[in-house]
Length: 107
Ligand SMILES: [Zn+2]
Image (cartoon, rainbow, N blue to C red; front, side, top):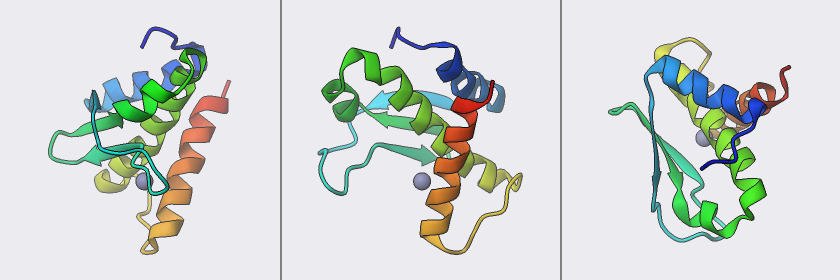
């Protein structure tokens, strides 16, 4: 992934600071319930679904990966106890997306 711009780079840097490994892996079919990425606490590692990346235009890949990294990093921070882990799954997912967006928008 060579098209990482300055904003996208923040999520990569954060992952490195947390010592989270980043892998681009085949996580299965892309569909309505698509798995875009996953967080593996035992790595710790974040896996980005290669199938999704390959379907995107090259110019969209950096932002997609940065968002996925930010999202999964939120789950890592939940596990570390740095942020509250909501009991409701949908609320957890929203919080992770909000964190990812904030990471990409912060100047
Ligand atoms: Zn999630």
